[in-house]
Image 1 (cartoon, rainbow, N blue to C red):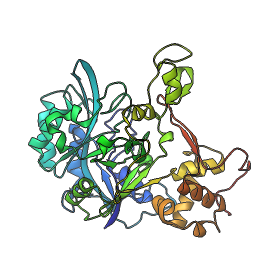
Image 2: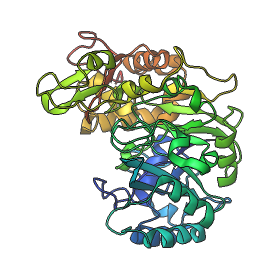
Image 3: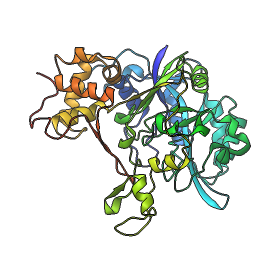
Image 4: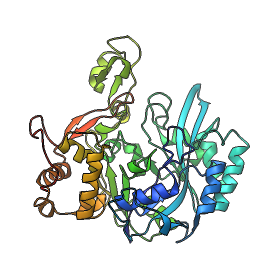
Length: 426
């Protein structure tokens, strides 16, 4: 079965997360986006875990369905929800902060398990180590290697993926608190790691500059803190629609089962370039190296971004992809595309109305962005067709993000759009 999966979300119990990030909220937006499998997020949080057990029921092996599917209303009243299935997979993210080799390490790790019993055993072990109540993404003084050991002991069918692997502050390769290799982080258990999450500020091409990462599958997810952001990055599969086939497809890392990933253009990620937000300083790695990674305005250290960190570890001039490696599709989310055409913010009422119209004409967001021929779009929405054409070819204008500020990716240059541009002819 071909399906789309977003394997990193959060519940309302995680910091800075929308109260709308309920199971019903995620379900409704997954329908609009064209996503079939959504991570539950935050199974370590006791209250959310109780909600998961109350509102989900077993479906395909290792997957769960929402008991109240029929009662979920569309997030956009103009649209009815499609009949395509949406399932949930039990997931959590743990923030491991600990000291190793004389340095404080801050690494976020994603956990996946196929059943509530496994999750409960993991939660019991983690609760004995630290506070798992105060945040949906708990902060524990636990070595990443030891977290993996707990998962292997309590959930033998589970797997761990280092989250947003390059983010400066909280990741396995982060410039501020990370490691230089998977082996350095996970030690004698490193062989149990078979995938990395690229994060919004890097893409597979960047990761494939490093030969030490060749054996790892690269997954991409939204890490959404509100359900409308679901699927800003995602994974494409053509395999059995169950937990165990998914895990095998990721481990196999071949486009026969793991078809590909949907990516941000990495410049849009908020840690792509180096910089200092307080001083509005954004620098590419070559410039910041010349400055000794010091802000030229305030003389404080720059936040060294993902691109710089990849360059530090890269041992290739060009990325090397295996012949059967998953494909990569770099996209601009549809609301952002429509916002550019209309000259307003992507979350405004006008954009949401046009978004609903696009979905009513062409189906889900991913159906439109990935599969609909441009010739089918052009008669009713010529500017949108042109934007999609440029995005699919990578012909976009890129303003990199830095130090916590998202970058901007545009399909049209200055002056190409009129003041009263329309997404649709009528």
